[in-house]
Length: 173
Image 1 (tube, helix red, strand yellow):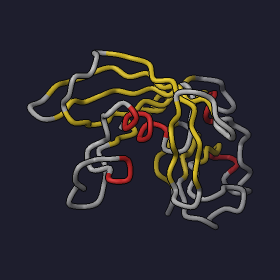
Image 2 (cartoon, rainbow, N blue to C red):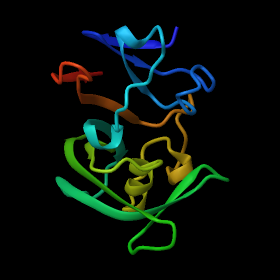
Image 3 (cartoon, rainbow, N blue to C red):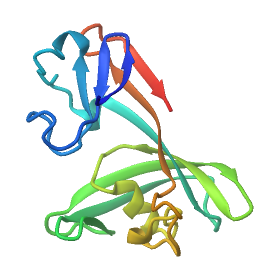
């Protein structure tokens, strides 16, 4: 039930907490199809070996056509929120993302974002820090929520090295 997509013999799984004790929370996991029966999680450092691209809709304001955001981020698990800082502070992790302006509409701008690091709520917090909260994202400063409670942040593509053949796989949504 939790298999989202298969590409050759790689299976992308996103199951609820407890679906597999080797997968904490709702972390997306990467398995080789031949390993699914035994549920051996392939050792794969997603933040370094996977290239992820996102699209975000933000209010149309003066935003450069491209840029790099660098902050220090601290996660607060009590309120499930991360905070950005311009300088290093205790318990902070460095966060870097790159964006390009894809399209300008009457009231919104579409950004394409690539992550250099993968921090908790990184895109949401960093865009909010520069005054561009994602449409619908009340937690990080949007003016109003979307009717269905969603935010306008879309995981656009994933580029990953196949765990056994080493072939580069590209999945686009």
